Length: 455
Image (cartoon, rainbow, N blue to C red; front, top):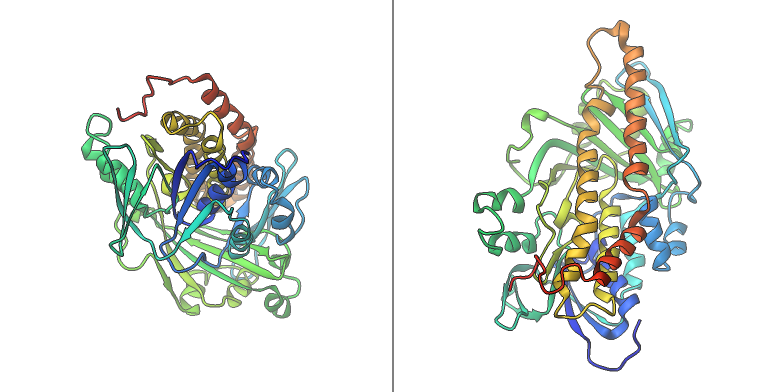
């Protein structure tokens, strides 16, 4: 980190002050000091987030260690991370009583931790660097490249701004992504594919969410397995995920009801809406009492229409980059979205802060980010997408109840293989990816002929 009093070497605009945007600002600030001026634009009037649980993987936890945030963040998790990663899976589509199918504990995959999303954001707000200027009520509508190479930003309140580098951390609806693909040129992207890349699509799945005090379930059902453990209540065609957050004082519940026939069909109505307790209970009326008691505790339940992105052919172009949900919004079945956003932010932030990165070779640095992150994030998204129906929702089971036990044992092996695939595909983590990206930057692989340059 430079302590120079010279003017910043360039300006970085980050659209979106969610987890991805905050981690990016913190990473740049920590490793570049005041060498880079950061403008962080947030569409709302404060830094806030949906009150939902978030899973922090071992890979994302490594980033927190590098940024000196691990102790603060792990302190507010449900429990201290241990050397094993465990979850209890139950067969729950039995009104008179389900049973524990198996208890998955990985011997090779180190555990991350689960926490309340707002508590994570509150800690990140405290770590925003002095080189970062916050701008609220700034909803980007589009950007334009100027003859000088800088970027003009246009906001919904009719204000404008100028930056050297733009990072879209603006979520699944990302105006940055939309503008990037609309303006990139037909020689790079087939115009007929623009909406395929810029628009999210509905998976056909509805998700019911709630967070409530653990004490509420403890009083209703003291022996309920969901009081202390990560539990998946599985049944044909749907499942419920429950786990403690906020040092075990709250329980986060996510209940999935998929309909493959509706995949890709435009969802009518609000993607997120408040619903009645009765609607939630009706969706799981054929589930075991343990699961129903968890749903009985729901407070202010909401229903989310689960949308995702198609795989993008690129995350960067010229001086613009996408991170987090703006780049790879995925299903929540592996609880990997936030972790991938954190990894994106760390790798990109380290590259932008690197002493070798100048305004002239920014496209080279952004290309290095893309080369180490694009394929892995899309692997995770594909794994997450293919997980639920054949696995947790028992759609791979036949109709012959006589063979069900044998089929469930085979299904168990497939689930373990899927979860352990993180070890094989993701070995090394974001820190190792950063080292690889730095090597690419140092080698100047694309110097003078950068494929990502607009010149």
